[in-house]
Image (cartoon, rainbow, N blue to C red):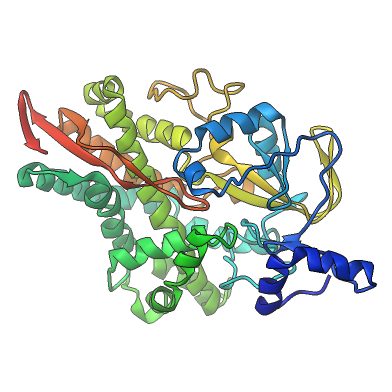
Length: 444
Protein backbone atom coordinates (compact mmCIF):
# COMPACT_ATOMS: atom_id res chain seq x y z
CA UNK A 1 0.00 0.00 0.00
CA UNK A 2 1.32 3.48 -0.78
CA UNK A 3 2.46 5.60 2.14
CA UNK A 4 -0.03 8.43 2.68
CA UNK A 5 0.87 12.03 3.42
CA UNK A 6 -0.38 13.77 6.54
CA UNK A 7 -3.16 15.43 4.50
CA UNK A 8 -4.29 12.10 3.03
CA UNK A 9 -4.29 10.61 6.51
CA UNK A 10 -6.62 13.31 7.84
CA UNK A 11 -9.05 12.58 5.00
CA UNK A 12 -8.75 8.81 5.26
CA UNK A 13 -9.16 8.78 9.02
CA UNK A 14 -12.52 10.47 8.85
CA UNK A 15 -13.78 9.01 5.56
CA UNK A 16 -13.06 5.29 5.89
CA UNK A 17 -16.44 4.45 4.35
CA UNK A 18 -15.66 6.53 1.27
CA UNK A 19 -12.40 4.63 0.80
CA UNK A 20 -14.28 1.34 0.99
CA UNK A 21 -16.73 2.58 -1.69
CA UNK A 22 -13.83 3.61 -3.93
CA UNK A 23 -12.42 0.09 -3.59
CA UNK A 24 -15.64 -1.27 -5.09
CA UNK A 25 -15.28 1.06 -8.03
CA UNK A 26 -11.80 -0.19 -8.75
CA UNK A 27 -9.51 2.25 -6.89
CA UNK A 28 -6.81 0.27 -5.11
CA UNK A 29 -7.08 1.76 -1.65
CA UNK A 30 -7.96 0.05 1.58
CA UNK A 31 -10.15 1.84 4.11
CA UNK A 32 -8.29 3.47 6.96
CA UNK A 33 -9.50 4.10 10.48
CA UNK A 34 -7.42 6.46 12.64
CA UNK A 35 -4.49 6.02 10.28
CA UNK A 36 -4.42 2.22 10.15
CA UNK A 37 -5.99 -0.44 7.93
CA UNK A 38 -9.57 -1.34 8.78
CA UNK A 39 -9.99 -5.05 9.46
CA UNK A 40 -12.87 -7.47 9.60
CA UNK A 41 -13.66 -9.07 12.93
CA UNK A 42 -11.82 -12.42 13.15
CA UNK A 43 -14.02 -15.46 13.56
CA UNK A 44 -14.77 -16.62 17.07
CA UNK A 45 -14.17 -13.45 19.06
CA UNK A 46 -16.68 -11.01 20.58
CA UNK A 47 -17.48 -7.61 19.12
CA UNK A 48 -17.47 -4.93 21.82
CA UNK A 49 -19.05 -1.58 21.09
CA UNK A 50 -16.96 0.52 23.45
CA UNK A 51 -14.60 3.47 23.26
CA UNK A 52 -11.50 2.59 25.32
CA UNK A 53 -10.32 6.17 24.81
CA UNK A 54 -13.45 7.67 26.33
CA UNK A 55 -12.48 10.11 29.06
CA UNK A 56 -14.62 8.46 31.74
CA UNK A 57 -12.88 5.14 31.08
CA UNK A 58 -9.46 6.77 31.07
CA UNK A 59 -10.18 8.31 34.48
CA UNK A 60 -11.53 5.10 36.00
CA UNK A 61 -10.54 2.12 33.82
CA UNK A 62 -10.85 -0.90 36.11
CA UNK A 63 -14.40 -1.88 35.13
CA UNK A 64 -13.28 -1.73 31.49
CA UNK A 65 -10.20 -3.82 32.33
CA UNK A 66 -12.32 -6.45 34.06
CA UNK A 67 -14.87 -6.77 31.28
CA UNK A 68 -12.15 -6.88 28.63
CA UNK A 69 -10.52 -9.85 30.37
CA UNK A 70 -13.86 -11.61 30.87
CA UNK A 71 -14.73 -11.39 27.19
CA UNK A 72 -11.76 -13.55 26.23
CA UNK A 73 -8.16 -13.34 25.05
CA UNK A 74 -9.03 -10.89 22.25
CA UNK A 75 -12.01 -8.69 21.41
CA UNK A 76 -12.86 -6.65 18.31
CA UNK A 77 -13.61 -2.96 18.87
CA UNK A 78 -15.44 -1.67 15.78
CA UNK A 79 -15.14 2.03 16.65
CA UNK A 80 -11.42 1.85 15.85
CA UNK A 81 -11.32 -1.42 13.88
CA UNK A 82 -8.77 -2.91 16.27
CA UNK A 83 -8.29 -5.93 18.46
CA UNK A 84 -7.67 -5.55 22.18
CA UNK A 85 -6.05 -7.92 24.64
CA UNK A 86 -6.29 -7.72 28.43
CA UNK A 87 -5.34 -11.11 29.84
CA UNK A 88 -1.81 -11.38 31.15
CA UNK A 89 -0.77 -14.41 29.08
CA UNK A 90 -1.99 -13.16 25.70
CA UNK A 91 -0.93 -9.56 26.23
CA UNK A 92 2.57 -10.66 27.18
CA UNK A 93 2.80 -12.91 24.12
CA UNK A 94 1.80 -10.12 21.73
CA UNK A 95 3.80 -7.43 23.47
CA UNK A 96 6.98 -9.52 23.59
CA UNK A 97 7.04 -11.03 20.10
CA UNK A 98 8.66 -8.28 18.04
CA UNK A 99 8.92 -10.45 14.92
CA UNK A 100 5.17 -11.04 14.58
CA UNK A 101 3.92 -7.87 16.28
CA UNK A 102 6.09 -4.92 15.43
CA UNK A 103 6.66 -1.54 17.05
CA UNK A 104 8.16 0.02 13.93
CA UNK A 105 4.69 0.67 12.53
CA UNK A 106 3.87 2.77 15.60
CA UNK A 107 2.92 1.96 19.17
CA UNK A 108 -0.26 4.01 18.84
CA UNK A 109 -3.24 3.70 16.50
CA UNK A 110 -1.45 5.23 13.50
CA UNK A 111 0.33 2.79 11.19
CA UNK A 112 3.67 4.37 10.29
CA UNK A 113 3.86 2.08 7.26
CA UNK A 114 0.92 3.97 5.80
CA UNK A 115 0.85 7.41 7.37
CA UNK A 116 3.45 10.02 8.21
CA UNK A 117 3.69 10.41 12.00
CA UNK A 118 3.37 13.82 13.66
CA UNK A 119 7.08 13.79 14.51
CA UNK A 120 10.03 11.60 13.47
CA UNK A 121 9.52 8.21 15.12
CA UNK A 122 11.52 7.30 18.19
CA UNK A 123 14.62 5.39 17.07
CA UNK A 124 14.41 3.17 20.14
CA UNK A 125 10.70 2.77 20.98
CA UNK A 126 9.30 2.75 17.45
CA UNK A 127 11.85 0.59 15.64
CA UNK A 128 12.61 -3.13 15.52
CA UNK A 129 15.86 -5.09 15.04
CA UNK A 130 18.35 -4.64 13.55
CA UNK A 131 18.02 -0.85 13.88
CA UNK A 132 16.68 -1.20 17.41
CA UNK A 133 19.60 -3.37 18.47
CA UNK A 134 22.12 -0.67 17.64
CA UNK A 135 20.34 2.28 19.24
CA UNK A 136 19.31 0.32 22.32
CA UNK A 137 22.92 -0.73 22.88
CA UNK A 138 23.97 2.94 22.89
CA UNK A 139 21.19 3.88 25.30
CA UNK A 140 21.82 0.90 27.56
CA UNK A 141 25.48 1.80 27.86
CA UNK A 142 24.64 5.39 28.80
CA UNK A 143 22.14 4.10 31.38
CA UNK A 144 24.37 1.30 32.70
CA UNK A 145 24.02 0.04 36.28
CA UNK A 146 27.24 1.91 37.09
CA UNK A 147 25.83 5.16 35.71
CA UNK A 148 22.58 4.72 37.65
CA UNK A 149 24.49 3.92 40.83
CA UNK A 150 26.34 7.22 40.49
CA UNK A 151 23.01 9.03 40.21
CA UNK A 152 21.48 7.44 43.29
CA UNK A 153 23.39 9.61 45.74
CA UNK A 154 22.04 12.78 44.12
CA UNK A 155 18.53 11.30 44.00
CA UNK A 156 18.62 10.45 47.71
CA UNK A 157 19.95 13.88 48.70
CA UNK A 158 17.40 15.71 46.57
CA UNK A 159 14.53 13.58 47.86
CA UNK A 160 15.54 14.24 51.47
CA UNK A 161 15.71 17.99 50.85
CA UNK A 162 12.35 18.02 49.08
CA UNK A 163 10.52 16.12 51.81
CA UNK A 164 12.14 18.29 54.49
CA UNK A 165 11.01 21.48 52.71
CA UNK A 166 7.43 20.25 52.55
CA UNK A 167 7.41 19.33 56.22
CA UNK A 168 8.92 22.67 57.20
CA UNK A 169 6.59 24.65 54.94
CA UNK A 170 3.37 23.40 56.49
CA UNK A 171 -0.01 24.09 54.95
CA UNK A 172 -1.83 22.17 52.26
CA UNK A 173 -0.05 20.86 49.20
CA UNK A 174 -0.65 18.85 46.08
CA UNK A 175 1.53 15.74 46.01
CA UNK A 176 1.43 15.68 42.20
CA UNK A 177 2.78 19.20 41.67
CA UNK A 178 5.00 19.37 44.76
CA UNK A 179 6.51 15.87 44.70
CA UNK A 180 5.64 13.74 41.67
CA UNK A 181 6.35 16.51 39.17
CA UNK A 182 8.86 18.54 41.16
CA UNK A 183 11.29 15.70 41.86
CA UNK A 184 11.82 14.13 38.38
CA UNK A 185 11.88 17.52 36.63
CA UNK A 186 14.68 18.53 39.00
CA UNK A 187 16.92 15.47 39.18
CA UNK A 188 16.45 13.91 35.73
CA UNK A 189 17.32 16.95 33.58
CA UNK A 190 20.36 17.38 35.80
CA UNK A 191 21.29 13.75 35.19
CA UNK A 192 20.90 14.21 31.44
CA UNK A 193 22.97 17.39 31.57
CA UNK A 194 20.40 19.94 30.39
CA UNK A 195 21.56 23.52 30.75
CA UNK A 196 18.02 24.84 31.00
CA UNK A 197 15.15 23.43 33.06
CA UNK A 198 11.53 24.13 32.18
CA UNK A 199 9.42 21.73 34.20
CA UNK A 200 6.13 22.67 32.56
CA UNK A 201 7.41 22.17 29.03
CA UNK A 202 8.96 18.81 29.90
CA UNK A 203 5.76 17.56 31.53
CA UNK A 204 3.58 18.86 28.69
CA UNK A 205 5.90 17.30 26.12
CA UNK A 206 5.57 13.89 27.74
CA UNK A 207 1.78 14.24 27.91
CA UNK A 208 1.74 15.27 24.25
CA UNK A 209 3.82 12.28 23.13
CA UNK A 210 1.55 9.80 24.91
CA UNK A 211 -1.73 11.48 23.95
CA UNK A 212 -0.58 11.35 20.33
CA UNK A 213 -0.75 7.55 20.49
CA UNK A 214 -4.54 7.64 20.66
CA UNK A 215 -7.30 8.56 18.21
CA UNK A 216 -8.08 12.01 16.89
CA UNK A 217 -9.99 12.95 20.03
CA UNK A 218 -10.02 16.10 22.16
CA UNK A 219 -7.07 14.90 24.24
CA UNK A 220 -4.86 14.38 21.21
CA UNK A 221 -5.88 17.62 19.52
CA UNK A 222 -5.36 19.72 22.64
CA UNK A 223 -1.98 18.12 23.29
CA UNK A 224 -0.67 18.55 19.74
CA UNK A 225 -1.81 22.18 19.72
CA UNK A 226 1.05 22.84 22.17
CA UNK A 227 3.58 21.38 19.76
CA UNK A 228 4.70 24.63 18.06
CA UNK A 229 5.86 25.94 21.43
CA UNK A 230 7.17 22.77 23.05
CA UNK A 231 8.77 20.73 20.25
CA UNK A 232 11.33 23.35 19.09
CA UNK A 233 12.31 23.98 22.70
CA UNK A 234 12.80 20.25 23.38
CA UNK A 235 14.74 19.79 20.15
CA UNK A 236 17.03 22.65 21.04
CA UNK A 237 17.69 21.29 24.53
CA UNK A 238 18.72 17.95 23.02
CA UNK A 239 21.41 19.47 20.82
CA UNK A 240 24.99 18.78 21.83
CA UNK A 241 25.90 22.39 22.54
CA UNK A 242 23.07 22.66 25.07
CA UNK A 243 24.26 19.73 27.18
CA UNK A 244 26.64 20.00 30.10
CA UNK A 245 29.64 17.65 30.36
CA UNK A 246 29.38 14.55 32.49
CA UNK A 247 25.69 13.83 31.92
CA UNK A 248 23.77 11.02 30.23
CA UNK A 249 23.39 13.20 27.14
CA UNK A 250 27.13 13.50 26.71
CA UNK A 251 27.47 9.71 27.00
CA UNK A 252 24.97 9.30 24.16
CA UNK A 253 26.74 11.81 21.92
CA UNK A 254 30.01 9.98 22.61
CA UNK A 255 28.59 7.09 20.61
CA UNK A 256 28.28 9.41 17.59
CA UNK A 257 31.97 10.28 17.95
CA UNK A 258 32.71 6.56 17.65
CA UNK A 259 30.58 6.28 14.53
CA UNK A 260 28.01 3.98 16.18
CA UNK A 261 25.19 6.43 15.50
CA UNK A 262 24.92 9.79 13.75
CA UNK A 263 24.83 13.10 15.58
CA UNK A 264 21.20 13.47 14.54
CA UNK A 265 20.40 10.07 16.03
CA UNK A 266 22.14 11.03 19.25
CA UNK A 267 19.86 14.06 19.54
CA UNK A 268 16.83 11.84 18.95
CA UNK A 269 17.94 9.46 21.71
CA UNK A 270 18.30 12.36 24.14
CA UNK A 271 14.81 13.42 23.08
CA UNK A 272 13.56 9.92 23.87
CA UNK A 273 15.07 10.23 27.34
CA UNK A 274 13.07 13.39 27.96
CA UNK A 275 9.77 12.12 26.56
CA UNK A 276 9.76 8.75 28.31
CA UNK A 277 12.09 9.48 31.23
CA UNK A 278 10.09 12.31 32.76
CA UNK A 279 6.38 11.71 32.25
CA UNK A 280 6.31 8.03 33.16
CA UNK A 281 8.40 8.66 36.29
CA UNK A 282 6.16 11.57 37.30
CA UNK A 283 3.19 9.25 36.86
CA UNK A 284 4.80 6.35 38.72
CA UNK A 285 5.74 8.46 41.74
CA UNK A 286 2.35 10.18 41.88
CA UNK A 287 0.52 6.86 41.64
CA UNK A 288 2.74 5.35 44.35
CA UNK A 289 1.87 8.23 46.69
CA UNK A 290 -1.81 7.64 45.94
CA UNK A 291 -1.41 3.97 46.83
CA UNK A 292 0.36 4.72 50.12
CA UNK A 293 -2.25 7.30 51.10
CA UNK A 294 -5.05 4.83 50.39
CA UNK A 295 -3.40 1.87 52.15
CA UNK A 296 -2.12 3.11 55.53
CA UNK A 297 -1.37 -0.45 56.63
CA UNK A 298 1.09 -0.79 53.75
CA UNK A 299 2.64 2.58 54.50
CA UNK A 300 3.12 1.38 58.08
CA UNK A 301 5.04 -1.61 56.72
CA UNK A 302 7.19 0.73 54.66
CA UNK A 303 7.81 2.88 57.72
CA UNK A 304 8.99 -0.17 59.65
CA UNK A 305 11.47 -0.99 56.91
CA UNK A 306 12.27 1.82 54.42
CA UNK A 307 14.34 -0.63 52.38
CA UNK A 308 10.97 -1.85 51.11
CA UNK A 309 10.71 1.33 49.06
CA UNK A 310 11.66 -0.49 45.86
CA UNK A 311 9.01 -3.16 46.50
CA UNK A 312 6.39 -0.50 47.22
CA UNK A 313 7.20 1.32 43.98
CA UNK A 314 7.03 -1.91 41.96
CA UNK A 315 3.65 -2.83 43.42
CA UNK A 316 2.30 0.65 42.66
CA UNK A 317 3.52 0.28 39.07
CA UNK A 318 1.72 -3.06 38.77
CA UNK A 319 -1.55 -1.87 40.29
CA UNK A 320 -1.81 1.47 38.47
CA UNK A 321 0.14 0.77 35.24
CA UNK A 322 1.36 4.29 34.37
CA UNK A 323 1.38 3.25 30.69
CA UNK A 324 -2.08 1.73 30.39
CA UNK A 325 -2.07 0.88 26.67
CA UNK A 326 0.47 0.47 23.90
CA UNK A 327 -0.23 -0.90 20.42
CA UNK A 328 1.44 -3.47 18.26
CA UNK A 329 0.88 -4.15 14.55
CA UNK A 330 0.72 -7.64 13.04
CA UNK A 331 3.61 -7.89 10.58
CA UNK A 332 2.11 -10.95 8.83
CA UNK A 333 -0.91 -13.20 8.98
CA UNK A 334 -0.59 -15.06 12.25
CA UNK A 335 -2.50 -16.64 15.12
CA UNK A 336 -2.81 -16.05 18.86
CA UNK A 337 -4.87 -18.16 21.25
CA UNK A 338 -6.38 -19.97 18.28
CA UNK A 339 -7.56 -16.70 16.70
CA UNK A 340 -6.48 -15.75 13.18
CA UNK A 341 -4.98 -12.26 12.94
CA UNK A 342 -4.51 -10.55 9.58
CA UNK A 343 -1.38 -8.64 8.60
CA UNK A 344 -1.76 -4.94 9.36
CA UNK A 345 -4.07 -5.49 12.35
CA UNK A 346 -3.60 -2.99 15.15
CA UNK A 347 -3.80 -4.56 18.61
CA UNK A 348 -4.33 -2.62 21.81
CA UNK A 349 -2.15 -4.27 24.43
CA UNK A 350 -3.96 -3.12 27.56
CA UNK A 351 -1.16 -3.37 30.10
CA UNK A 352 -3.37 -2.05 32.90
CA UNK A 353 -5.73 -4.99 32.46
CA UNK A 354 -2.91 -7.54 32.19
CA UNK A 355 -1.26 -6.24 35.35
CA UNK A 356 -4.48 -6.76 37.32
CA UNK A 357 -5.47 -10.12 35.82
CA UNK A 358 -6.75 -12.36 38.66
CA UNK A 359 -5.64 -15.41 36.67
CA UNK A 360 -2.05 -14.26 37.22
CA UNK A 361 -2.13 -12.16 40.41
CA UNK A 362 -3.82 -13.14 43.68
CA UNK A 363 -6.19 -10.42 44.94
CA UNK A 364 -4.91 -8.14 42.16
CA UNK A 365 -6.77 -4.98 43.19
CA UNK A 366 -5.10 -4.86 46.57
CA UNK A 367 -1.92 -2.83 47.06
CA UNK A 368 0.46 -5.21 48.84
CA UNK A 369 4.13 -4.30 49.13
CA UNK A 370 4.93 -7.85 50.23
CA UNK A 371 3.74 -9.18 46.88
CA UNK A 372 6.30 -10.66 44.48
CA UNK A 373 5.63 -8.61 41.37
CA UNK A 374 8.39 -9.89 39.12
CA UNK A 375 7.07 -9.99 35.57
CA UNK A 376 4.64 -7.09 35.62
CA UNK A 377 4.50 -5.16 32.36
CA UNK A 378 4.39 -1.59 33.62
CA UNK A 379 7.77 -1.05 31.92
CA UNK A 380 6.92 -3.22 28.93
CA UNK A 381 8.36 -6.63 28.12
CA UNK A 382 10.88 -8.25 25.81
CA UNK A 383 13.36 -6.25 23.76
CA UNK A 384 11.16 -3.17 24.00
CA UNK A 385 11.15 -3.10 27.78
CA UNK A 386 11.84 0.45 28.95
CA UNK A 387 15.61 0.97 28.66
CA UNK A 388 15.50 3.65 31.36
CA UNK A 389 13.50 1.67 33.87
CA UNK A 390 16.39 1.44 36.33
CA UNK A 391 16.60 5.24 36.45
CA UNK A 392 12.84 5.47 37.08
CA UNK A 393 13.11 2.85 39.80
CA UNK A 394 16.01 4.69 41.42
CA UNK A 395 13.99 7.92 41.48
CA UNK A 396 10.88 6.23 42.87
CA UNK A 397 12.88 4.37 45.48
CA UNK A 398 14.62 7.57 46.61
CA UNK A 399 11.34 9.43 47.16
CA UNK A 400 9.54 6.60 48.95
CA UNK A 401 12.52 5.75 51.13
CA UNK A 402 13.03 9.33 52.32
CA UNK A 403 9.29 9.71 52.81
CA UNK A 404 9.17 6.64 55.05
CA UNK A 405 12.03 7.98 57.18
CA UNK A 406 10.53 11.45 57.71
CA UNK A 407 6.73 11.19 57.58
CA UNK A 408 4.70 9.13 60.06
CA UNK A 409 1.57 8.96 57.91
CA UNK A 410 0.10 10.28 54.68
CA UNK A 411 -3.54 11.29 54.65
CA UNK A 412 -5.75 12.35 51.78
CA UNK A 413 -6.91 15.95 52.18
CA UNK A 414 -9.45 15.97 49.36
CA UNK A 415 -10.51 13.89 46.41
CA UNK A 416 -7.73 12.82 44.01
CA UNK A 417 -8.28 13.90 40.40
CA UNK A 418 -7.16 11.60 37.59
CA UNK A 419 -5.99 13.17 34.33
CA UNK A 420 -7.25 11.34 31.21
CA UNK A 421 -4.53 10.53 28.69
CA UNK A 422 -4.66 8.22 25.67
CA UNK A 423 -1.72 6.12 26.93
CA UNK A 424 -0.82 7.24 30.47
CA UNK A 425 -2.83 6.75 33.68
CA UNK A 426 -1.77 9.76 35.71
CA UNK A 427 -3.07 11.93 38.50
CA UNK A 428 -3.86 15.59 37.95
CA UNK A 429 -4.10 16.40 41.66
CA UNK A 430 -3.47 14.53 44.90
CA UNK A 431 -4.27 16.69 47.97
CA UNK A 432 -2.55 15.21 51.04
CA UNK A 433 -1.50 15.93 54.60
CA UNK A 434 1.77 14.72 56.08
CA UNK A 435 1.78 13.74 59.72
CA UNK A 436 5.43 14.24 60.55
CA UNK A 437 5.33 13.81 64.32
CA UNK A 438 3.13 11.93 66.74
CA UNK A 439 -0.19 13.75 67.04
CA UNK A 440 0.97 16.85 65.15
CA UNK A 441 0.13 17.76 61.57
CA UNK A 442 3.16 19.52 60.11
CA UNK A 443 1.92 19.51 56.51
CA UNK A 444 -1.73 19.94 55.65
